[in-house]
Length: 390
Image (tube, rainbow, N blue to C red; front, side, top):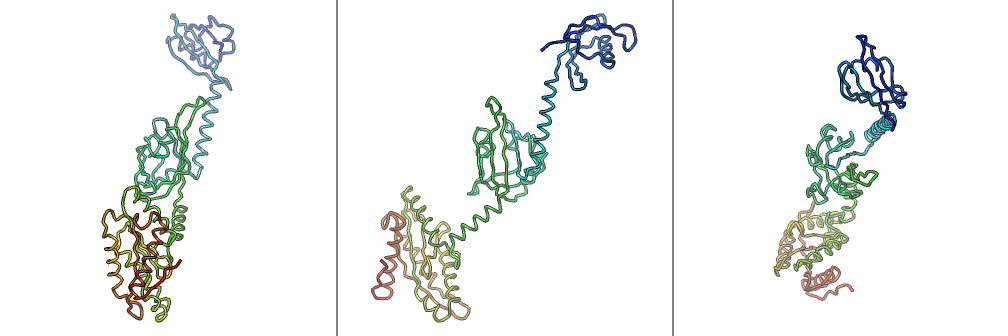
C-alpha cells in the first residue's frame, strides 16, 4: 500500500500559519483542506504524537503524526477506504442480522467459545421468562432456567444443546422440559449448531428454541389413549404386551423374577343380565380401582376386555411367595361387596399365575401359561372341567 509522507512546519501565529516542507508523490492525494491544516498547525506547535482518521467524501485516511522538533512534524498517511467500506458493510450486516434475529418467532441465543451469551432475541427472553438484559453477557451456566430430560432429571451443563454445539456437534430436534425462574414448565425443542469461520475454527455456537408444549402434550394424550382401556382407565392389551416385554428384559438382565396374574371374574354376567350394562360397567371400574390399590406402584394392572384382567408384578426379586401373596390380596379386595346404584353385588375371580423365567421365557409364553392356569382355576372353582381356548 503506498504511504504518503509530508513534513509540515508551523510559522507565525496565524491559525493557518503552516508550511509544507516536503511531500512524496503518494501524498499528492492526501487532504490539505483548511480544517485539516488548522489541526496540523496545532499539532506542530504542540509537538503532538498520535494517530488521527480523516474522512473526505467516500475516502478515508489514517494519519500518523510524529514530532520532528522546531515546530515541525512528519505526517504519514495510509488510504484506509477499502477497510472502512468493509467495516461499514460488516456493521450493516450485523444490524441486519440482529433485525432478522429479533423478528424471528423462535428464540435464538448465540454464545462465544467461552460459553458467554453474546446475542439473545426477545423471543428467547419471553420463552425463558426473563429480560434480554439478563441473558446477554452472562455465562451459559448463569442463564436462569433449567432443562429436564423426559424422565424429569436435570440436564448437566455439558448435556445442554448449546454446550454440545460448542463441542462441534449438530443438535437437531432435542426435546426437553424447560423450568423457568418462576417455576412454570414448558416443553421446548432445541436446534444447536457450532459457528465456524472460513478456516474451520470454532468461534461460537447458535441455538434456537421453540415452545412445543401443546404438541408434546397432545402426543402424550394420543399415546395414552392408544394404551388405555377407555372404560376403566387401566392399561389395555397393547400397553400390557409392551410393558411385559420390557419388564422381562430387565428381569433377565438382573437375574430377577417377574409374575403375571390373569383374572376372570365370577358372577359378572349375572350383573349385566339382572342390572344392565351400566351397572356392569360400574362394577368393572370398581374392580379396576381395587386391583390398583392392592399392587405396588411399579406394577401394572390391565384389562384385556370383557371381565378379564391382568396384573403384572414387574420385579418380585427372589421372593417365591410374592405371587401367591398378591393372589391373596386380590381375593380379599374382590370379596368385599360392591355398592352399585340400585344394588350391592359380590364378585370373585379365577386367577392364573405364571412366573418368569420358570413358566415362560418370553411374553407370549408367559401370558399363555397364565391363561391356561386361569382356566384350570376356574374349572376347580366350578367343580367341573373348563377347556382353555386353543
